[in-house]
Length: 514
Image 1 (cartoon, helix red, strand yellow):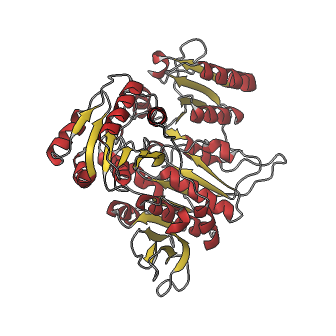
Image 2 (image 1 turned 180 degrees about the vertical axis):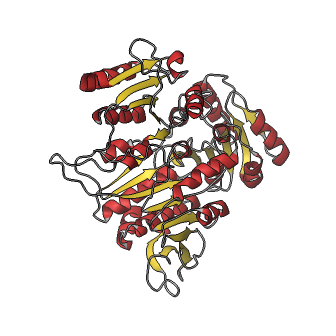
Image 3 (image 1 turned 90 degrees about the horizontal axis):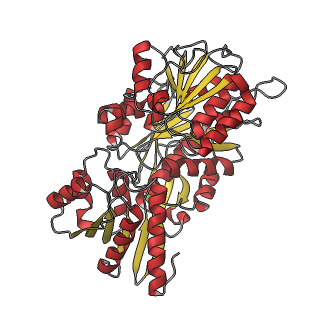
């Protein structure tokens, strides 16, 4: 991609550039702040006006004055013409920097395509800029870019990778799609040895080749097909992460699509294809081997000289603690592959795994009473994530449903049907999931939680129903396989509603939640 090739580095010709920033959440704020600092003329548009956004706008207005303007509402997000003096604007921008999630078929993106105006993600802007020079004007160190994407497991993997690099004595930070905007990371005055960058398909759609040190794709499953116009578009955007990789392209040996992405990528000469697997690894892979005493050992057969005949121990499955499901081990192996590509020692990998604690809302134990385990995995917002969660347990009372995003539930139901003992449906439209259950798990009882648009009421009903049907030795698992926005503001709010309902149930029964 050669759009605006002259716009590189902090000393590039940014001054006076007219930039439209779409969205004013944490990403939009960081983009607007950075561009105004560079001397660009920045207009931000956002369809949703809130007090926080007004407060943030006031902050940037105070800092940057006439370099920054913001416009709220549907009229503002319906046009790219914002740059003539006076209300409403009338001229188009030179560049659009978009927050994740702005669809290619939205009015602004359609108009930009018709007018030939480049659209960048904040990731591309950060890569074009590089680390900000120090106060004395000297360049700060160039960090290794360690980037990853996938349908599921991204946050767990970047969290583990950050910990591995930190244990190795590096100054590293997880950023991108994980909370800290990448533009805040590249503007850090102390600089970093490594940027651990989580990338969504939305960000990759608007990003040119990143030339990373190492890149990984964890898995590919059906998700966001409505946004990308189909599975092929979704896969193509994910595959962009491998382009121009310098050292290692890391793929999931149990997901053929990720290996094919590496095979098709245009990489720097000498970059290696490195697989990870929860089975026995071949040469140039990381994986699991079984020791004589029956324990599982995470090993490296990629980043050692005698890899054809030896495997280097990194950690054991027991290092995770009591709960180490297959998908967590896979994520740890992917993180270890990236860490080893960056030069981290095996001891640093083990130290990070031993210190790992599961994030909230991802296979999170909430209570264990009457020999029934209650699990919150509200973050399982698509069938692939739900399959990983449900496969961690043998006998499951499943709480599922929500906004389906156009996915096909049949493969999931076929896979997990033998584990299901009862299914309780939440969500305003359960027809797709119910239909798949009727076709592929007709023996499994299905109950609707009710509640309509009231997600909290629906979750209370689901928990009460689960309590009536769960038997000793079973797990009640909230793994919705769907987004939350039909009944909740976010997947986190959905998880909190589950935790609150389970806690109330436990208190009434005389038990305590974990």
